[in-house]
Image 1 (cartoon, helix red, strand yellow):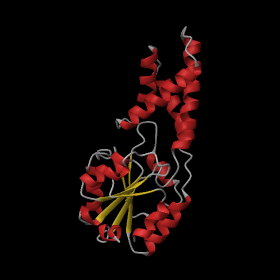
Image 2 (cartoon, rainbow, N blue to C red):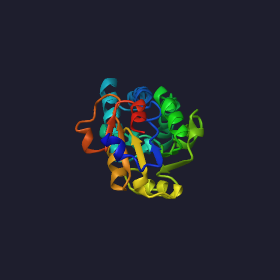
Image 3 (tube, one colour):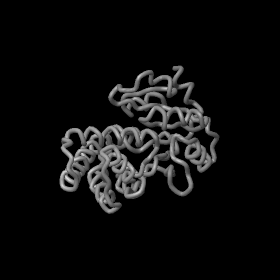
Image 4 (spheres, helix red, strand yellow):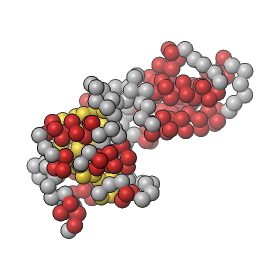
Length: 240
């Protein structure tokens, strides 16, 4: 098969974390709704504003999406941008409490069943495995979330962009560093992730192969970003 030929030189496989190995969007949505409710109560109690809770929720979700796309992972900045839109302000302690509320919910991540199946399969095949993920920003703790991941023992290395002077994805640095840690050329490495730009296109620019995991078929023209597209991780087994 052409796909098999494309990946025949791969010796190491890197994975993104959120929405690739573990569910995140669903719990994050709950977290954003809870923060929006708290912000609404704060505005109602401290300012003479008649804005509705639904409007604040809509604003919180839209600002979170935009700032995440822009690579701004400090959630305190997310809440501040929402308040700026409302022409109100809050003390740093309030922003921190909302961040703590957010992560108390958003850090409850469940591994995908297909992740276990694929990792066991790849280990038996002799591939070296790693995780390339981005920092959770101030108030978050990606290493703590990773430590709770029950499949962590399958991985040889973990690189967190945005920490230890490593730039976050989609910068090429975390991909290049990860390949170097294995002593491999980038052409011998594969990146698997759910983000077409931060995971797949960036990996390709760094010289790696890439596979996009589009679980909900929501990425338009997905093949433009990755070498191959799957709807679940079990499909990757067919390529090796």
